[in-house]
Image (cartoon, rainbow, N blue to C red; front, side, top):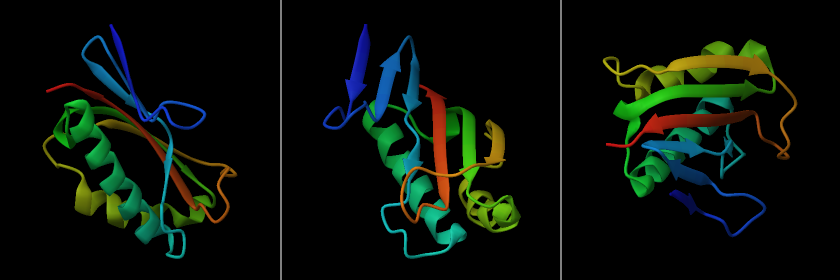
Length: 115
């Protein structure tokens, strides 16, 4: 069985299937801040969406991060390091790319196991 959450737009914001939750790429709701603030905003969204799907950040298995400017890597990591559970770190990739959302400096996609 496949459970789709947040299907009001063009795509589901989360899909739960076979004990895993897949989150769509997320961008900051408030894009007035810098990379650290946008990253923190997205990570809070990830926590809420994981909870809605029946998971949490301790069950993350994979995270992909897109930065508009790879020179912002350290600033993004400041927010990441303050948020991630040091005993439950997922695998992660970070690359530079143009982001689809106007003013979006960061986009993050995550996959987790259900609790």
